[in-house]
Amino acid sequence: MQIKLLVEGGSMQPGPALSQKLGPMGLNISQIIQKVNDATKNFKGMKVPVELDVDLGTKDFEVQVFSPPVSELIKKELGIEKGSSMHKKTTAANASIEQIISISKTKLPNMLCKDLKSAVKTVIGSCVSLGILVESKPAFEIEKEIDEGKYDKEIQEEKTETPAEKKEELDKYFSELKAEQEKVIQQEQAAKEAEAAESGETTEEKPEEAKPETPEPKKK
Image 1 (spheres, rainbow, N blue to C red):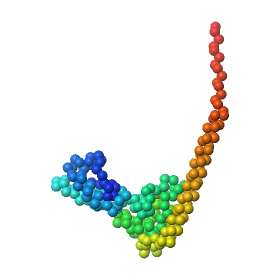
Image 2 (image 1 turned 180 degrees about the vertical axis):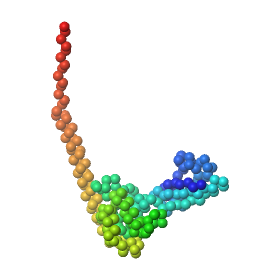
Image 3 (image 1 turned 90 degrees about the horizontal axis):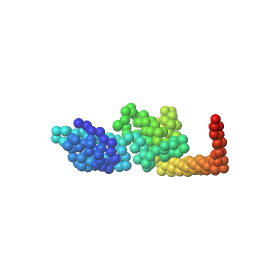
Image 4 (image 1 turned 135 degrees about the vertical axis):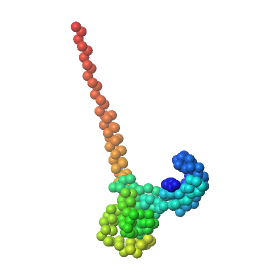
């Protein structure tokens, strides 16, 4: 029997959900947790798909670890905890094409892509949804440039190391851009607060007018 799990790399913990799934089978949950953590220790900080191949007769099991989702690999490579929820206002990181190729090579065996170039485009697509720049440009622009063959040399040579000078330039660009984006957000927030305060003052200056009393009906 096969059981699919999504666990924290090297940090699988016992819990109600796990007990409900494995407990009725009479499996040794502590032993499973230990083996899964040993098998996924190289993926610390990432969500990792794991499959248990269980023999219900003997209670023996095998642990098979799959490559983490592309988004998890991207965040790990770039050292970020999450992507940007406001793509048009903020960016989460600035990746090099070499970093994208490195992620693509790691994930390729578990992807349906026909070659590395297709895998690179898939990873770039995830960068779009996470609000991540690539080569100091919006990721969707890099997708077009890949189609045009701009990065064919790097992909064919499977370059995965970013030159130090280039990395420094990418980091500097991102740092300056992030500072500018934060400044704009603060200005927008200040404007909203000022508008809210002004609206409150206006309400105090113009109290609600008293309604005229309804005349009592005349007695017959």
